[in-house]
Length: 313
Image (cartoon, rainbow, N blue to C red; front, side):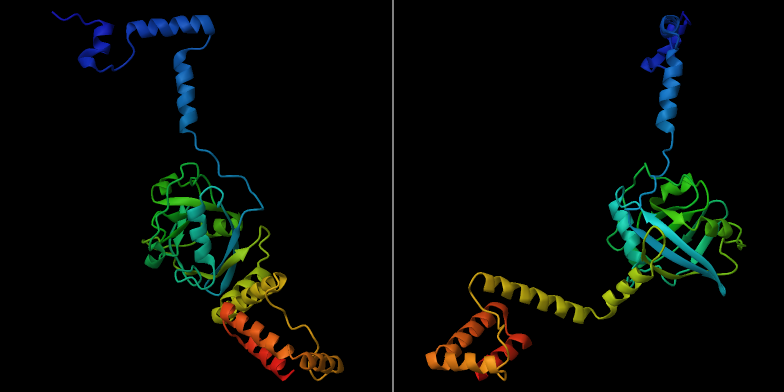
């Protein structure tokens, strides 16, 4: 006959299902000695492990992006987003790239395709944004409050929480927070939607770009537009600048000489040309230097014009 005692029930089948009589007695003895019951200590530790940390505090040194929203003919205003690049670099950089001009998966022109009141809004659904992208989860960054900005793990969608939205952690990773414009989100929270959670009056992102913590983005936006305006001309200018820097380095090493003398049509220029002709060395040295430069750096318009002028001297 089986004896049904506490110890036997607690370890039946080799799988402990609760405290045995010995454990209870031991815990009570600890409570008498210390005044703290082990169950209380265990409960506190579990509560601490289950606690959700708040989002990082504001840091003006982080990168900031902006989204301008419009509903119908009404300008709703500007959302200034602080990116957590110091906590989740890949995700924050992905959102930044989607806000820059010229991005093939840019957020400019997209609409809010889903809105659930007191939960979140979704925008920027674009399969092109998920090419080669996989964002890792960071359990310390969660949708704990209104204004949490996140990217789907595949990178193809952006979400902004309208309240505590912890369930969203299963599909999206928080990469930033709305720093300015929370009043806009509170207004969106009361937007009328249809049975598919789509706003009845379309809400469109009209403009995006980089900015600062104050949201004064005008100068930065102009620089970004110039940056993508003529990439070929920009590349040519950078190439010429690099070439000139190498030439200066060769001059400093004594391997070449920049033409710093006045033009030949001036008096001092003609005098120097006469000295070179008298010695018979001016033209030969100029041609040798030009050939060496052309061999090292390739011929360009600047060196060609210099060489023509030197030959005439």
